Image 1 (tube, rainbow, N blue to C red):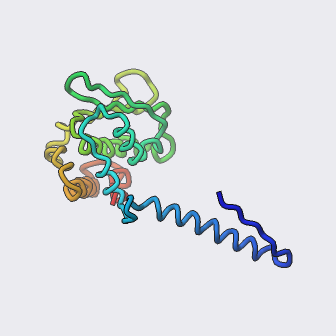
Image 2: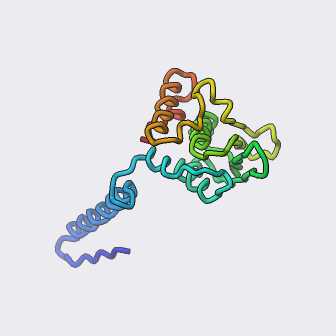
Image 3: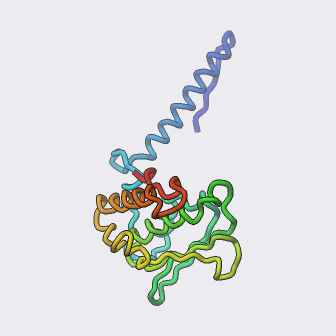
Length: 195
């Protein structure tokens, strides 16, 4: 914690300005530091996501790290369930509240993009399930299977072989979104923020 003491009684605005500059510098430093890896190199969102890829959906901590990097909690609070005893291996995202504002309008499109990224980066996951309301009925569960993406993207698992392959997936999603073939809300399927 930083403490700023102002001792300039003649010009309190000068002290306040100095304090504001210090606080701003701290926030810029934190933001700058958070976009770097352990060696101090700048890291893009796509590099961060790719570094979190994992082999097994049963690795809950690795799954949570990916979900956090994808900002799933900004859509709505959630829990996860893992179905790993037999194929198909499933990652289930259970939202505990309905999305609000922009998120509710673009929920399906945004989740399709994020679920596709999860299918690519978790090597043995076959399906991503997520609910679109807080209802407990299975009718409200949306499913995205790796096999569902074959026609538009080919083998989704081939995109986790290298960072450039993964960035190629993000580019394809963006191109399909621009053509209106991926989702209805362009901003929800534009993974440009992952670069």
